[in-house]
Length: 254
Ligand SMILES: CC(C)(COP(=O)(O)OP(=O)(O)OC[C@H]1O[C@@H](n2cnc3c(N)ncnc32)[C@H](O)[C@@H]1OP(=O)(O)O)[C@@H](O)C(=O)NCCC(=O)NCCS
Figure 1: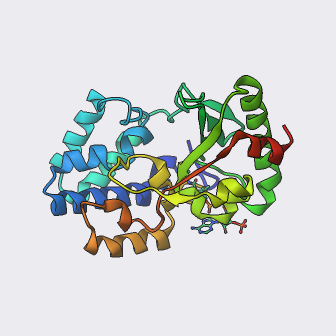
Figure 2 (figure 1 turned 90 degrees about the horizontal axis):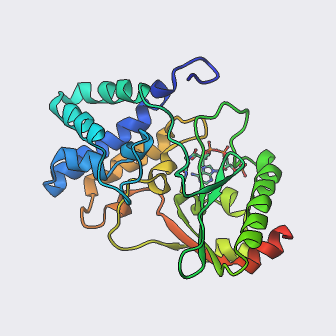
């Protein structure tokens, strides 16, 4: 896999991997937590390397070995080892319980309360513009129209649509949705796992490179990392959103 300039995708990810490794080291030192635990449970690597969601499984034995090997290396060698290991892995697919629409959106089936959770993703992308760029608004809204037509048809009793992501900090994302859904956004508080792109995605630009200014801002703030509330050290908080399905039916005419 290569980008538009022919650079191997794992190499593009170097700064993104680097910032996560750096965070794991700081967290490990400040919290007195084994580095292997910090890398496993507090970075996005397990999912990114297509081993699955640690919210729903224990760490994959192969990944445990990889982390053990990484920790055993000198600090300068760790990133190279991770990038080489990543080059051997297949791309991570959408989890099987999600229903994808277009290249970027997916929804889950309603939970017991009738709530449908929605998701956004973007993988190494060589398009001229990113998926949230103004020139792509019509296409993204077409994707969402198809997704909510499906939801309304398949689960007419669904009550609400929920999201949770750093993405809701951006008007460029909120503009794709009904106004009441965007306006409902509230920072998530309380202890939780932070191994998803709902947190780590904020460091990426659409071609898969890290955004240097966001990485630098984050690294500077880590001096003051509060290990009881580590999420507060991230430039963007994860915001939770909700609105009734009827708002989406009105918005997209489905
Ligand atoms: C979301 C993602 C594609 C944004 O990358 P990008 O390079 O900024 O991409 P786009 O070109 O698509 O978006 C550009 C738009 O977003 C806005 N934007 C991007 N980053 C922003 C930021 N940090 N603050 C405010 N606006 C921002 C830009 O102003 C622009 O809007 P405009 O067209 O109105 O000017 C990228 O972060 C990514 O791939 N993340 C990984 C996926 C992810 O985060 N998933 C979350 C799962 S819950």
